[in-house]
Length: 464
Image 1: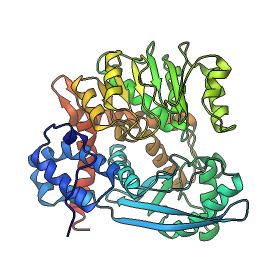
Image 2: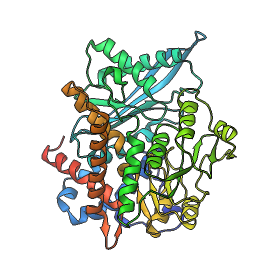
Image 3: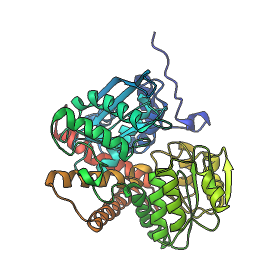
Image 4: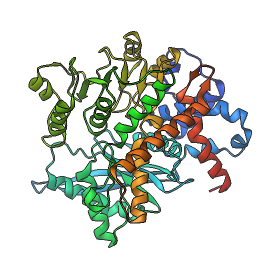
């Protein structure tokens, strides 16, 4: 007997709030087909709440069941990854690649190495990636992959052996015109280098099958900075709609990895003051602001020493909150969540609004819970969801793919200008589809803007 579907993730139902009957019916269908994949349920519902009303106004998409097809991956690959640690002991992890949608281009999306990786998390990320990649206007489909492997505490040799074992299997499923992975949480330049090297070794060809590569072997300038830079560019565009700017504003950022570091760098360049950074152990609050010299310390701490953010507080003598990785109770004008999903809850969103926050631009994927998003929209603050605000990373990956295909390299200034223009155009798309009187609903704008291009391509290609 089939178990009755339970809506675990759509928390609006838990609080007794009504959900449109059609959205509820659709979510019952999604949950029944994808049980226990809570992150995926949340991602689909967030999109369904704006797309299903749009389908009623555009019945051609409804008749073709485009949205039902869009939530179903074209292909899911799951495989084991055996490897040997430095003690000579066998270890085994699970690997995944979700090839979600290739209607507008080859699958494109990162690889995540983290103990929390499972099918539901990667399906959520792949689903978001479809919309994000569409918004860039580049010919990129959506995909995502990774493993429950934890690179923390592992030696370089252990990481290499793991990456080589993973790529021995994954190689047969990817290619420059099929599926082009990149980095994500737990996957930086070191991991990409090992994976690309193994792909090249097996296939005996040098192609642009990975993005985020080192400059020495086909990488693009600005690619490491792109997600953080793009998040700040998007925030600047949102602020311009109310005649504001980043200059002179206090900015709270979560995380201290790649995205957070370069978001901080761009905020400093734009004249803002970043006061927080965090990691899984806690957060720092530096009321004097993180300047260029302090940011260099953070980059060395995290990228070279692989230390903890509390060392920043010890070194510079600022506030450190142990055991709390979310800095949203601190006062700020702009919040940039750059760590991980669901890191801003309803209470924290209310506190941000209460403390005068006027703009939230998401550097991470789905970092705000549904209740938090509702708080932002109800209070009509500028809220840029991740699929729009952090699309700069994959946009620059697309630019790296172009450079690889052309066998040339663009200058830093050329890539940065292209990135900036892409973020400006993403913002314009969100405004076009999300304007509601004097208010711009960026959730609605990014969902519909990302949907239309993919949906039209799917309809043109028939039942495939």
